[in-house]
Image 1 (tube, rainbow, N blue to C red):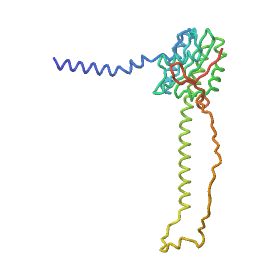
Image 2 (cartoon, rainbow, N blue to C red):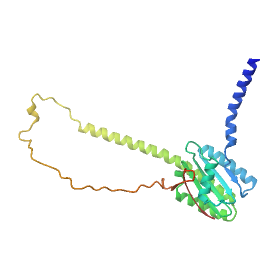
Image 3 (cartoon, rainbow, N blue to C red):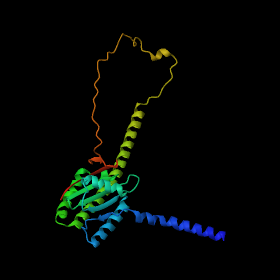
Length: 252
């Protein structure tokens, strides 16, 4: 009887462990939340599947939310808070980008977090917004969200390419510098030869000491104000939760 109980307990634990990834996947916040009903059921399902696949592949959440009202907040604060409150972001830095659309105030806002701050410069965010705006204004929401998804994938992929390129450039510079230093050391190297008489090292009348002194007059100190508001062309700010976000927005 005891053996059966132990076997059943082990089996139950194993089933529970293997089921954990499924529960974790199901608990993830939806990457498409259409509270304003701007999309048809088919459009929402298609966009959701696309963003899910993209987010997992790029290791960064790409999400779209539509809201009826901003509840008295600014578009920036609403989007930042929604991102944090609903636990978006992948990895230890919670990498992700979110597009928020508010139909009541006609606002669009893109919030970036983690590595996505570097992937989306201020200029690029405005370019995306300008490209989407005409479609948002005439009610072609699915097309606007398609533009956002496409540009998000391009930018996040582009950031990975930049990181790889920077690594190899740094490696090449390091190797060249090391080669030049070693070459210089070799060129300057002269073998040391032993001399038995210390006088051989002294040239007659070559050592003359005279009185000398240095006078310290003044010093100039230049100070430059440090700014932490930008990161590679991406301005940043603190959300109400204290998290660092990038982003930008506009009207449509």
